[in-house]
Amino acid sequence: MKQETESAIISYATFIGFFLFLVLGVLSFEKDPDFVFDKFLTAAILLVFYFLHRKMHLTLFEASIGAFALILHHLKLYGNVYLGGIEFDIIMHFIGGYAISLVLFQALFGGNYLLSHRRIAVYALLAAIGMGTFVEILEFIGYSYLGKGEGILFYGTGDIGEWNDAAWDLIMNVSGAVFGIITMLALTWNPRNPHENMRKKK
Image 1 (cartoon, helix red, strand yellow):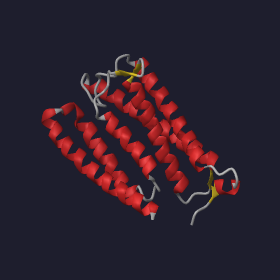
Image 2: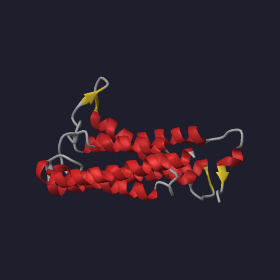
Image 3: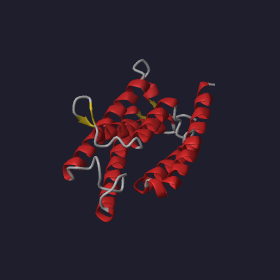
Image 4: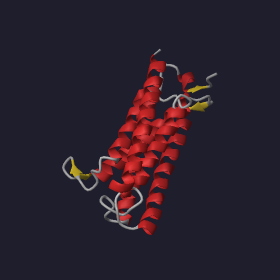
């Protein structure tokens, strides 16, 4: 019952979020053109999760962290400093890597796979790092062709430092992903029954 309730909440939330960001994307053409891509990309991500969250066996925990990461990106806090000197961009990339690793770990852990916790952890970690690296490549392509502006495709607030900024983004992506894997291992590992850590669900 709990799983069905959580699935229903995720379904409603992702559908509402998809519609909301779709509308915001359309409105951004006139009011905030630099963020059009960001809004539509978020809408697309939410639509994917609307259709796949049950197959991925997502719980409210992973879904909530993922939603928090998406919302955080759209708060336009880049350039601000928190916690005594930590740039928002650093926090954003850490949480992004953390959220991606949670989702990927749960998708593998809950699926019909004969995988040990160690393999799930390694696969999820490498995939999360790969996705974070892909985002950096996407940003680089955007910067190269579109120039200055805001949003993921432009060079603007939060991107100062060029290679230094990109390096720290990657470091925080990896750090967040590692912390996410540790979190999921702590939540799912059963030391009393090691056979549960290598299982095949029907």
